[in-house]
Amino acid sequence: MSELDPLDQVLITRSKQGDLDAFNELVLRYQDLVFGVILRMVRNHASAQDITQEAFISAFRNIGRMRGVNFRAWVLRIARNATYDAIRRSNRRSEDSIDEQIVTLGETLASGEESPEDRAMRLDLGMNINRGLGELQPDQRMAVVLVDIEGLSYDEAADAMEVSIGTVKSRLNRGRGRLREWLVANVEQLPPQFRLQQ
Image 1 (cartoon, rainbow, N blue to C red):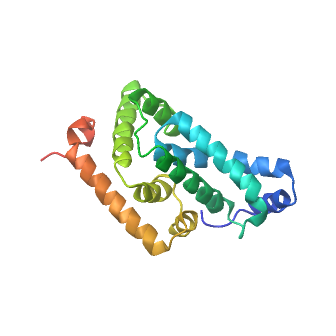
Image 2: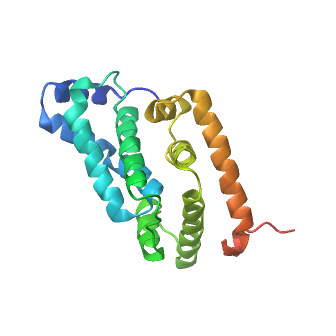
């Protein structure tokens, strides 16, 4: 989805001219994505809401200076900066709880018709992956979240992270490796269906 959305281009142009309704439309189009990325980074629902709001306020204030027409990558760059600032402010204190993660995963991974057993297994697996993501360095976590979870192209992730594509690939590779190591080291916490049989 690296192609530019024509509607985004129109909304960006109108937003730069001071049209608040156009900017609000951009917010509606991207707030779930931005919130999801931030939530996976900070792992706290209330903090993620605050940072998301801060990111969109910053985007509104700076829309006139936006270069290019890829709003998604641009707003994710702002969200990344706001998230890193929040992580630094909290001195990397972990602010998560099981209840918080269950609510989070229910919001971000909800599916259609599924049995209670499948839902419980999905939530359990999601909580473990979320814990593993929490063990990654912020730059690696951001790469994994943007590319593997949110499905951004390498180009868009590089633009959002303000690094080269090679750096995105490197961070992604290291992050995937560390996540894999964490899952192997904590295999007993995974639902039985996801444990490797030896």
